[in-house]
Length: 321
Image (tube, rainbow, N blue to C red; front, side):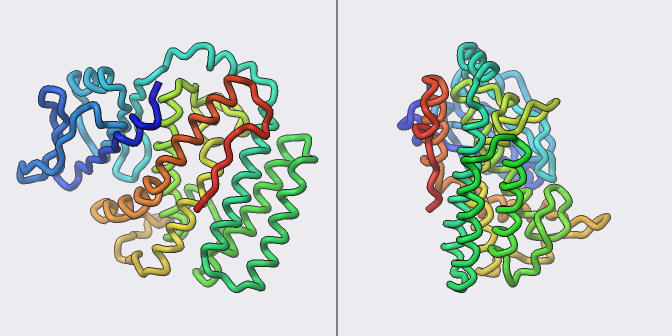
C-alpha cells in the first residue's frame, strides 16, 4: 500500500494533445514531447502517481503494462474535461475493505462528519477572502447555526437541506461583488460556475486516484447514496475540499487572471476555449497540489478509521489553510 513518503515522491503528468503534445514509453520511462518532437518531460514509472490525457489519443498495451507494473492510474479526458474513462490499477482486490463498505452501519454519522468539516472550511475560506467584518460575522453566526443543527439531524433529507442552505449563504458571500447568480452545477451559466465545474472535476479525479490507492470501491458512498454509475464515495470525499477550488477562483478574479475572451457562449452555456484551457488547469491544479499531502493523509487516515470501525470523533478532519 502506498506510503506517505512514496506518495510525496510521485507526481501527476498531464498531457494536452491539442497542443501537439504526445508521449511514448521507452524502457520504463514515460517521455512527453512537444509538437516539434522536443522532449519536455521525462519520468521513470516509479515517480508517476497518475497520468491524465486531455484530448484524443490511442492507448497502447505497453502503456497499460507499465501502469500495472508501477501502480499508477490513467485518466482520459475529453476536450471539455469530461472524464471518458479511467484505468485505476492499484489494490482493486481489497475485498475486506469492500465488504465493510457494503455493510457499514455508521454511514450516517460519517456523512454528518463530512458536512460539518465542509462548513468549517467554508468559514475559513470566507475568513481568507478579506470580507467586511460585519458581513463576515453575521454570515459566520448563521453558518454556526447550521453547523450546530447537524448533530441532532436524524435523516438524509434534513442533512441535505442543511448543507444546501449553508452552501447558498457561503457562495453568495464569497462571490459578493462578482455578479454571482447562484451555484448551478454543469449549467455553466457564467464564467465562475464554468471554472468551478472544471476545478471540481480536477479535484474529483485526484481524490478518486487516491481512493484507488487504498482499494476503495468508489461507487459505494456514505452520504451520496448508491446510484447507477455514480462514484458516490468520491462525491462524499470531495466535500471538505471544495473550498480549495472556491477560494482559488476568487483569487483568480481578484488578480485579474481571468480573460473573458478565453470563454465562448454556446446555447446559453459558458465554455472554456480548449486552446486556452491549459493556463486555467494550471492555476486550479496548483491549488490542489499545494494541499497534496493533506489530501493523502486525509484518505489514509479515513481508511484506517473506517477499517477499524473507530468512533466518529477519531475520523480525520481536513483544515483548509
